[in-house]
Amino acid sequence: MILVSAGILRNAAEEILICQRGAGGNCAFLWEFPGGKQESDESAAACLVRECREELGVEIEVLELLEQSSYDYPDNKIAFSFFAAQIISGTPQKSVHQQILWVSPCDLGNYEFCPADREIVARLASGK
Image (cartoon, rainbow, N blue to C red; front, side, top):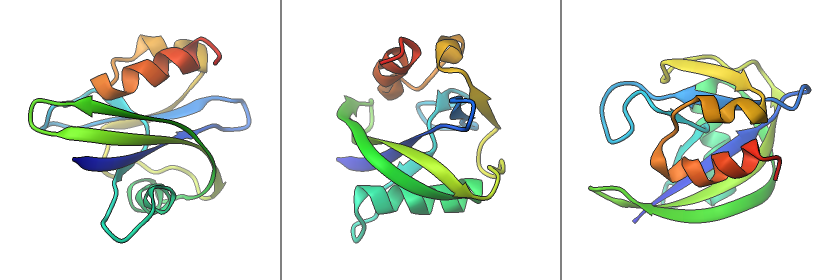
């Protein structure tokens, strides 16, 4: 099982940061929340801080664990930890993603997300 941390980062306008994956893998060109795979020596929250620094060039503060879930992809089972977080320094830069966007929660449904994210996307879009 692969452990993954993902961040629900909101800006001052309460928009949520979403990232479009590149080519390759099960979720090519689909949207996701920033984050990545947890290394063996780090906590889920520390993973999210590291991934946001590496992939977006920002420093974040993890606020709270929102939800944990798992998803069976054809080649792996992945356990997700979704955290509420905020950027404390820097501006998100596109480095590993095709696109990064700030989106109003009610507009999240306009983007095709990776299957493992769809449940929390629906909850966020409905204001929960």
